[in-house]
Image: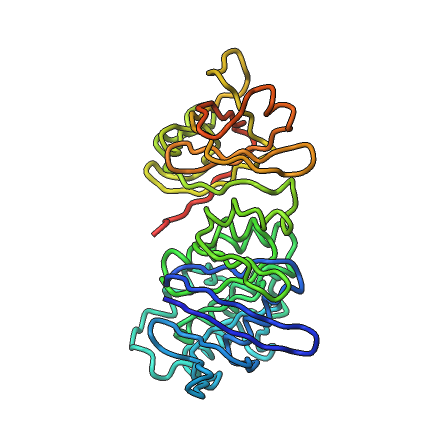
Length: 365
């Protein structure tokens, strides 16, 4: 368990956060630029000193203002990966990795194969003799990630590690972050203002706004929180759900994914039967129907029950539908809701276009 309760005042900016999350897992600090994410990250590492509060990881206190306890930064065993990687320019990739392994973790459990294991995990085999200036931005971040992990940290903190990369480089690095999450089994704090990164990686989300942790919970719950709309905008609002691949893709390129008590057909790429996955269904892409549809190009339909209706703007509503455990959110106009007689407790159908869905593998435990 990671528990953080901190307050600090730095000039005109005040920070007040309080959350707990299970570890290991990926805890995303999510919010707009200037919301206090990086300040909080530096408080956790000890690079900045808070005014009061507690930092506790798996029963060990790293900071406690009442006890006047503050473990020095170098003794907290937190691996910190910055936006720019900050590799040593005079060392090769091998040298950067071994710096973390030999210098920063002298008391790590002996494991002769550990560096090679991580090098393979991060796909660094062909880069070992290169200098940092010979690497792409994505490659530099993978090396920085490896160096941090080889220092045997008790917590890994990634401070917007993909912020300086273009979309193609971000897509290059994200699968490696997923591998670390699933195979390394270390608590990770991930700072980001990109919700697609949070969707792929996080198990727990702390929503930050103006120095405050306004809500905290699993990614499925936070994805439906009304306060998220102010950060991601209307077009990116939608429910995150988890499903299981029931049937591999056929000649159509579509696999069958079980969601709640129904199924969806969608492109599943290289995913395997039985594999758990996560996907976001945007509110703008869902259609509600009172009867089972016929003669439409939309192949996906899920039966469900309305559990909540709340205003979105002056002319639309957000309708939450339980489809057998997972909850989807659809945006409809107020006029349509009135004409259809939508109300809480009403059973209906949710229509989903296959082309709008992109699944991400997620072990989920």
